[in-house]
Structure formats: structure tokens, C-alpha cells
Image (cartoon, rainbow, N blue to C red; front, side):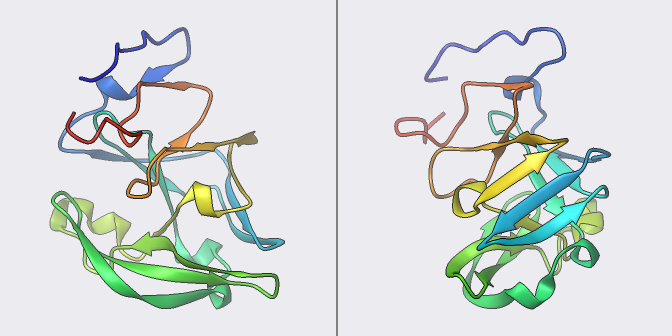
Length: 164
């Protein structure tokens, strides 16, 4: 590991205690994503995926997303744990952000419940919130982790952390 592990305080979680392979769990807190002056997503039915060294990634059911602002984008990527991801461009009157969200149309069996749920890169949104707390985005363009005050690292994704 490239940096010293931060010891979690009361009510905190360390990303170094998250499992590998990743685990998925339901989130009861309100989760919101805002882009281009529009609340694109708002839910109390999100799921989060926890993986060693990564801040959680939040996935939102399509029923709780203004899908008219999401357009299929080119390209796919492959996750060894979840399967092949497809991307969405997000389009509002104000602006467009290419490949700003992703989803798994046919996830592997252990992540079936994630089918068609959408994850947003917080770095590309105007803002994302979990339980009323504005999140920070995980460094790096590849990962889409959401950093909330109860999460401690160090986190994979920053320069120099690729080989952890």
C-alpha cells in the first residue's frame, strides 16, 4: 500500500476494511445527483458497492432518475466483478457531459440486483449528496467513488496509487 492506512474514528469506515471481491448493500439514506441545473437523480433506494481501497460507488434505480437527460454513449468497459458496463452522456439545456454515468445491462449473477442501476461520476456532476452530506469525488478519471465524511482512506485513484 502506497500510503499509511488511516484508522477510522467512531462512526467511520475505512475503505481498507471493505471486501474483495466487492459487496453490494442497500442504502436507506437519501441520495441525490444534480447536473446542469437539474436534479437528475433522487432516491432512498440506492445500492452501494464496497471494494477494498475504494470509496463506495452509489447506484441509483432508473425509476428514480430523470432518464430523459441520459443518452446512450459509445464504448464499454469491463469489471472483473460486475461484468461489462455501458455509459450514458448526460444532457440538459445548460450543458452536456460525455460518459458521465455508467450501468450494467447484464451484470454477473452475484450483482444481478444492480441491473440497469446508474452510477454517476461525482467529479462530473454539479454536486452529489448522501444523507444531506455533499460528497467529494475520488481522484482519477477511472473510478467513480463517492467520499463522505464517514469514509477514511487513503483511497486508490490518486496519482501514484495505480499499483496498490
